Image 1 (tube, helix red, strand yellow):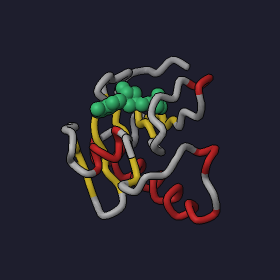
Image 2: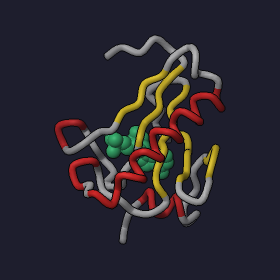
Image 3: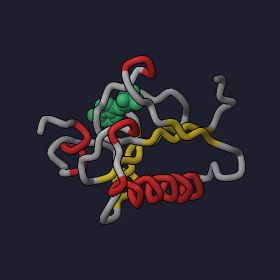
Image 4: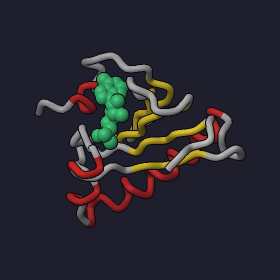
Length: 110
Ligand code: AMP
């Protein structure tokens, strides 16, 4: 499958990975929209939120907890951060592999 985030998870292309475990990889967004802009992805290919089914419940729970862990790791847990799932073209979704954006370290405008 020609999926850029699968390639990052498989180390076929480089990314600035800041954390990894058996299920998730966390790396810096190549085009950051805030001083802290991380992407959290499952290693296994899963499509965006509108394609999920029951078997993906554990992954969705895990990705949220991974975001909480990452916010603590990069020191924005108290100052605040925003978590975003883009879904579909009207949200500007570019990559068809489930990913959660974590944005922080400036006053975020909506
Ligand atoms: P989305 O619009 O929700 O699909 O977000 C995809 C994000 O992936 C964008 O913010 C891109 O800047 C980011 N992105 C695309 N390719 C790479 C890459 N090779 N390394 C890091 N981030 C990337």
